[in-house]
Image 1: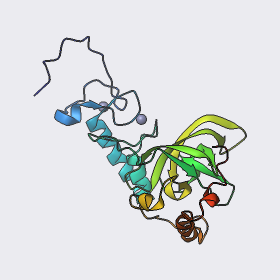
Image 2 (image 1 turned 180 degrees about the horizontal axis):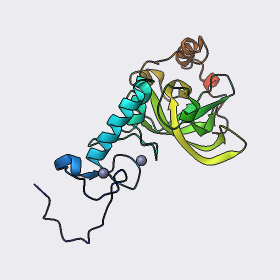
Image 3 (image 1 turned 90 degrees about the horizontal axis):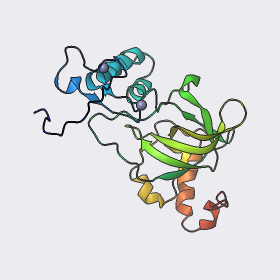
Image 4 (image 1 turned 30 degrees about the horizontal axis):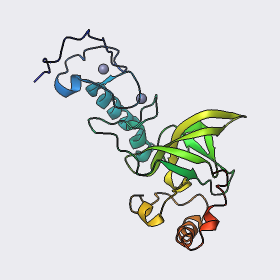
Length: 223
Ligand SMILES: [Zn+2]
Ligand SMILES: [Zn+2]
């Protein structure tokens, strides 16, 4: 069962970043294995991660189920979705455009994918309306996307940052492709749009864009 056939390599002592041990006490099989469920370079025991996830769920369930789900499935350190034993699904499209839908003209990225508006969930950075975002991955519910913004404005305070990463709700993203194709894999919004009526108008605008393509290009003259 154990893979002993590989050539003798100088063993690297990897430690679990949660229990700080190489071996997990009283654990065997899958639970004792070190794994890399996110983008962090330090591994974690499969069993330690499951224990941490259960703790998150118990602690947060009383506040918000969505937030508990989001937290237990996101690495607190690197912000990536935690994937245990499954391949990280790639987003169907690699880029999208931020649509702030009024307000301040900016959308703050979040450290974890959550519907909670508690300030601790927002990252320090925000994407500007019309800003192109690299799409890195989608959360388990499909509601959120983890994006990378180049030269994003700071959410609090002055200045910009070279690169910012975080989660954003899909209602704030415009996909640069045919709307029918996009609609099939986007989940329905779980909360109403930030400004009433905007969602319905946007769907109509997307269909109308096929007959009036120039209206969709007005924000993209920087090519
Ligand atoms: Zn451990
Ligand atoms: Zn991580």
